[in-house]
Image (cartoon, rainbow, N blue to C red; front, side, top):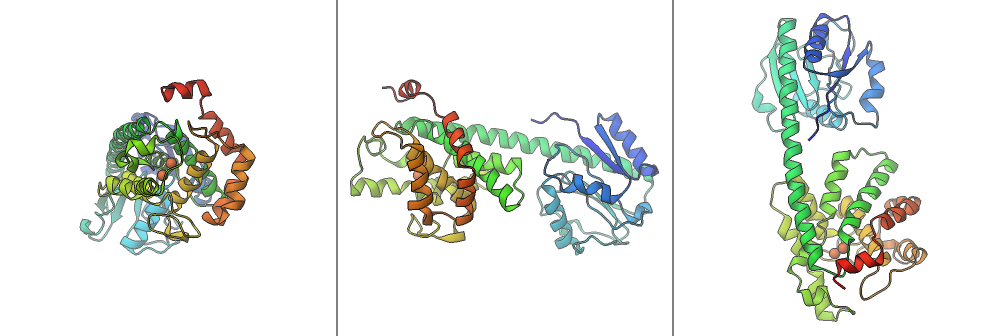
Length: 379
Ligand SMILES: [Fe+2]
Ligand SMILES: [Fe+2]
């Protein structure tokens, strides 16, 4: 659970309302105060790569006698959500032009609407991560500051509860992943490596294509990736632990683990579990087609599934198992990038190639020496 104090960034330090708010937030333990005197100055903060946990977000408005356009300042990856929300629900344009009838304040997953017209809350109540408060104008500046402070409490309480729910979900999912790995004694530490390497590849991939993928998204992906083989819980141990090649009937049985994994994890209405269900189902699909169970191809395969798929194969090739030696690094690289290149999205494969040394180092880091691996297999 995060215990960090919020940063506070305020516009217009000479504005009486903001100064009141500043004092109130300081009294509540806010730290790292930054004062910005123009919207332009805020931009590096708004769109910077670094997510600042607990950042308090303030937007200026005409209501505060500012001639600048209305600007939403938001926490990290909430930017697009808040903008999209405002656009769709309130009909604001992309540039957030001044809307005299609807000045507002927004921060950290919360929006305080300052409106001189009546707003029906049913219009804005279906965005579960956005805490909304509405204050009809005109209001006293002190009232505004207090309402903003209350909203800040609600947003932070909401955040803490979400963190706690995720922490508990994580414990349960990790327990489940560990149970599967115990049952499948041939693949020592495969689950942990697929989780860690998928996280790394996803980070590099989204950096490369310039699409935001937050730390929280990466955490969710790693957790979901750890359950990619959860369907093996329904695969007979005689097949899982068979030291040699599987016959046709056994192979068919083994391949059922993808769909079984999906069926086990789906319909939980928990976001990370839904992602895990999709990954479990699609991690043996191939970008060029010919995979299983759906024979999907191209972008019909979710990107996270494609990421786990390539890492799953990388690990299967490199890792030593009781019935086979691990392949040399260069052979594994050649198989993935040349022999089987049609299995993967070309852009993703290019990122994989670029960061291969880093991925390989990560693989080694999560691979215990042979003696401790033997302990794991009780051999
Ligand atoms: Fe699998
Ligand atoms: Fe696997």
